[in-house]
Image (cartoon, rainbow, N blue to C red):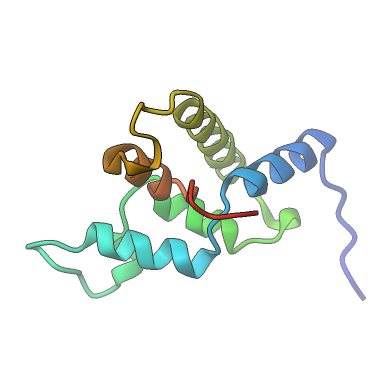
Length: 116
């Protein structure tokens, strides 16, 4: 028998906002974060644990169902939406050619070059 769980209306809206802004599939985000996290120290025994923040938390939320969200997941989603909104509203003169700006968005799971 399926478990029936109601999700708060505010969480429903946040879920939609989060998924509208985090436009990278989970595996694409994971690969990007692995690339960003690699360096001289390389990876520990579990590479997913060595992923840069906040991307690792965003990736964890992407892998969840809405009914399985925790309070921490909701805070991660709120932070991601706010940070993506702030970055996209403050687009640099170079736009997508500005690697620092684009990489900051990619770290949050938002690819400004991706078409929706």
